[in-house]
Amino acid sequence: MSSGRGAQVGVLLLTFGGPESLDQVDAFVKSVLGRTPPAPVLAAVRHRYQMLGGGSPLPATTRAQAQALAAALAEGGRPWTVLVAMHHAHPTFAETFSQLAALDLSQLVALSLAPYRSQASTTAYEQSVLQAARDANCTIPIAFPGDWFAQPSYVQALANQLTTTLAQVASQDRLGVPVIFSAHSIPERFVHAGDPYAAQLAETVARICQLVPDIQPYLAYQSVSGAATDPWLGPSVESVLAQLAQDGAQSVVLDPVGFVSDHLETLYDNDIQHRQEAERLGLTFHRCPCLNLDPLFIRALAEIAISAVA
Image (cartoon, rainbow, N blue to C red; front, side):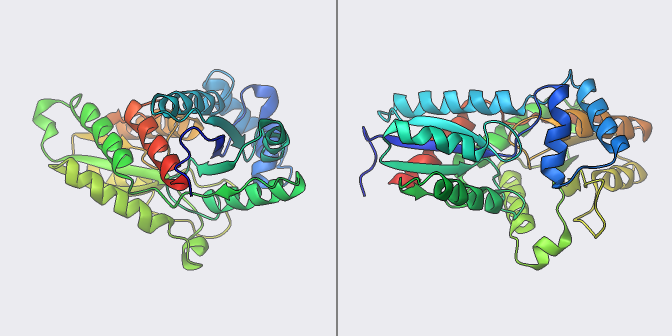
């Protein structure tokens, strides 16, 4: 297959989505849960988004990532079209595929922005891409990149971000500072059914620790669904914070490696709930920002897209 240099290649960034305003929250929650939740649940979620300024920054960040990726590809001689599709927000997969017929693409790379495969993210996204393509009678060849949790530029970008955050820790606490690497929890039954999510997370954390020595790493999970009725992956961030405080830690760094863009789970769950809990326990709290528009992360996405075509 051609390398795609100069060809009409499209890259489709696949993401979870989020409400950009309070009037989009109800529809977003209903889409995520697959049903209409009780009014108090919707009110509680709206309150959280209100605390963030009225909506999630994730859709805008994803659009900016698409623009940055297109620029990076063009700089390398690949003027490819980069589009966005969201599982629970606009533009939906169906809406994006309705635009593709007018673009005359020779190939489409469908790139999940979830680094760790789960049936709730990358697997679901890929299935939705195929369904949207069928519904739109799209005949463009579609390439799905392999899982990229260990992609070198991605791991290095995470390591760089963590190193920058560690520099903010008081010098007397910096050596051996506890670092909680957090990710969205998923039902344990997903893992029992063969989901590689937890194993891929552990591998990424291990690779970061090779690049950032002299820390105490912990892998924890967060943001368990309020509608959960069966066991989800643990330990929770809260339980690790409690153990660290009991063990005499003074500072803690929370690194949400499970997310590539800041959104509700980082800006509310981490920056508000986890920070308050850490301070209640007497811990000085530091939170590593997500990669968002980090240039090395954008380069990683470009390398992933190029490898999928080449």
